[in-house]
Length: 52
Image 1 (cartoon, rainbow, N blue to C red):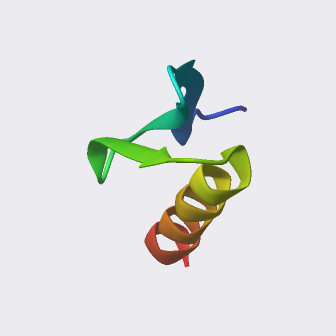
Image 2: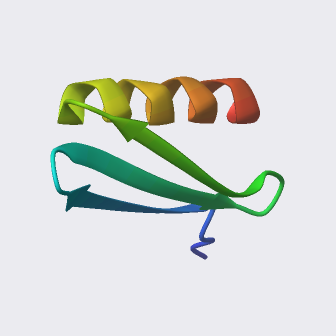
């Protein structure tokens, strides 16, 4: 059985990257950064904290 634990959308708006992260516990959060790596790192840290 599969269960959806999070939904992540990455977008590029003008000169910055945006990630929209939605989880059942944390709700919808948005992260902005100049590089994709910066935004991805923020999302990974948030997920590690929430699911550990």
